[in-house]
Length: 174
Image 1 (cartoon, rainbow, N blue to C red):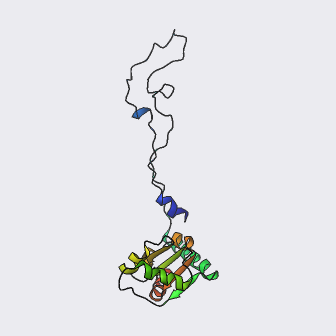
Image 2: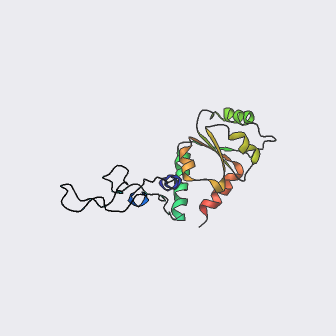
Image 3: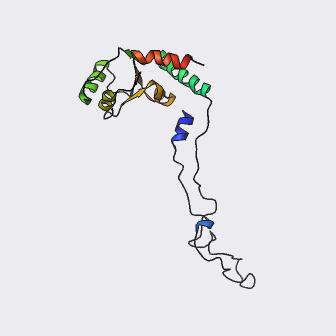
């Protein structure tokens, strides 16, 4: 989860530093004899309009995780959901037309309409996806798109019968 959330960060924060300020590099006043501190440039952070000293820099927050560790995390997350009886297995179903009302009816029948629900399908189905995307508490993914974050973020997981076999194949393969 930590790796997934870190990769989602934009990392575009930036402050103008001394090098970014466009001002003269001419020495302001002479080095000695003025009674004040030495001053070499108007870009200095001590002056109004000067650059920030150690400001934030754009950077990439993502980090690498081993494939086997990711697979183990998915297995573990699914195990926790199974222990809490939060996994529902449905026979494969189709929707002829994309209707949110029809999808909401399915959620109602499963008694999960007021909880975050993750639908896992064996392969992508455009009608089911289009029907679900207007509902804020439901998300539809295929087995190949399934992440540990999605599993842990959802209160209930609804698996299509075909997706169970595909999940077993991906998690049990080396």
